[in-house]
Image (cartoon, rainbow over all chains, first blue to last red; front, side, top):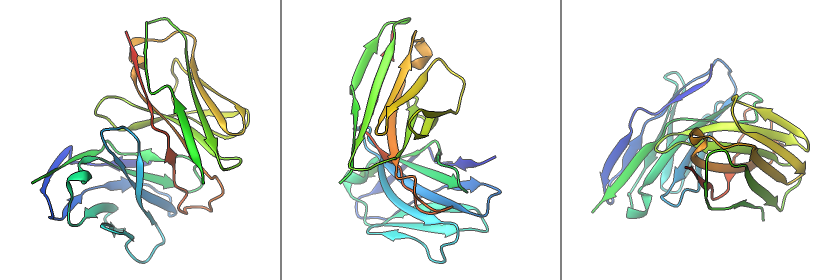
Length: 114
Length: 117
């Protein structure tokens, strides 16, 4: 069965510092995609970054990067130079094979402090 | 550009009352459509998804149903709400044209906070 695990229910980081949000996954399908979404207090889900299982390099999108370690089945999100506006819930998700759906983790609440 | 509309934003309903949440997508054709539910402080649980008009897949047995009467319209319904139906409901779409394992992103609506009392 496919599973996404986020072990950090909450994280704190100081403004301008970098933070890593953990995500591990489990799938037997060799072809899959990994996603990170941000959910601010308004509730909407905002796509941040994507990593394909066959991608050779780690994905980057501005201040977001994905530390993809395939052998360990981990896809950690790194946010550099944290800003107060980064305070939100962050969800890791996976699409496996030809499935149309995304499976989400339970999320990590990030709080950026001054 | 594509946009997704979901309404209402908040809803308070008594137990046993019916429910209808609507979601529409603009700017694309034949999207995959999804209904997710998020319990307070929890992750997202997929309820239904649809790859075409009249095609509905249910992920979990429950008190809810979904319908897709038009290509870009997805409706979540219930005949009689239960207390356990309370939660944050999110509609989403994807273009459905991605290849195996490629970056078929989900784009979400702004959600409906449903409180069943």
